[in-house]
Image 1 (tube, rainbow, N blue to C red):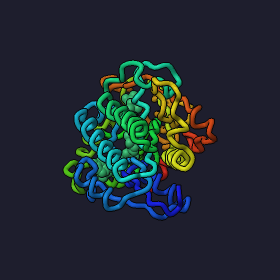
Image 2: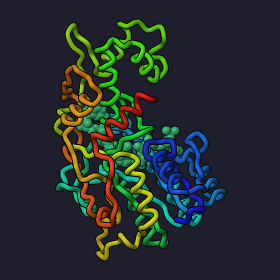
Image 3: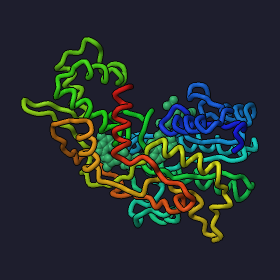
Length: 360
Ligand SMILES: NC(=O)C1=CN([C@@H]2O[C@H](COP(=O)(O)OP(=O)(O)OC[C@H]3O[C@@H](n4cnc5c(N)ncnc54)[C@H](OP(=O)(O)O)[C@@H]3O)[C@@H](O)[C@H]2O)C=CC1
Ligand SMILES: C[C@H]1O[C@H](OP(=O)(O)OP(=O)(O)OC[C@H]2O[C@@H](n3cnc4c(=O)[nH]c(N)nc43)[C@H](O)[C@@H]2O)[C@@H](O)[C@@H](O)C1=O
């Protein structure tokens, strides 16, 4: 990418978009065009058309999407399929129409079949049925991969697709109902530790960030305890307990968001669709996995976060909540063979995000 070329980062205030923006600035890219969700609703075809006609970016990082954890995906199924299809259809199609030189579409490893062999190779796409809790989101993401691939084949565009594993880092979503597991457990353990220490000031400050109406400065301690209980943080006479969803047995792989951003920029700077296009007519692997190549169980993750936060109480598993896919470790050979590797180990990343969370 030319350092002066106009680059559009869609979703620049989110977890990944903010890390991509930071990474681009650090590398000296200074012609970056941005729009908040409020300024440009990417589900609106007319507004997206007008934006591309006006700005004509040369490069596009498509990091805007409807995103959430397992329960959000399972609950807001219509929103996840509709909004994601609309956002990506609009951005990819208008990128083609306005002559964008290269686009990076962000998918997710949930595109792979629920029971696919491990580690997940790119070619396992579309070989079996998906995990049901996130099927609408996964189908939208598969449509995005196939849209990039089809435009490349028919129109000669250069649209790349990447499939990141579970991500975490600054500007993540810490909503206790809609977020992913890692930010949710950071927040739950932080609140639980504050409850152990009777640190009501910290608890009030934290809960103040909840949707309006749940808490105000005048909530009594009993009312706050009820709110915490509704999020799975409870106190008996002797101990504080934190609820962890599911059985704790599923395995997940976690990548620091700034490593993810680094991989995205690496791919945009060095790779083209022709480099990843297989010669076979049965194309199933034109996308690229991004991950660390290491996974842990949710129980191990919960214990790691508990220790780093310094929460002394107990954790227990709520088996009424879904486990989702039991394992989705990605095969990162395609990317690492090109010279890219993740830098931030999980324990270091958890320390960093815990410190970021306390500061925010
Ligand atoms: N987080 C993860 O663990 C993973 C994420 N991914 C993928 O990475 C990408 C980025 O995800 P992540 O950064 O976590 O998501 P975030 O929710 O943190 O950020 C998404 C961004 O998209 C914006 N956005 C959402 N809807 C619209 C819209 N209609 N118009 C304009 N902007 C919109 C949001 O703005 P606002 O907040 O104002 O709505 C936000 O800035 C997504 O494609 C996601 O599917 C893939 C695998 C794992
Ligand atoms: C990135 C990926 O994210 C989603 O998939 P997921 O990996 O299943 O997402 P998750 O982070 O929400 O959960 C991981 C595991 O952790 C368990 N778990 C324990 N306790 C909490 C908890 O407190 N919150 C959450 N959210 N999960 C918890 C939870 O039960 C599950 O077993 C996809 O829908 C899709 O969007 C996608 O692509």
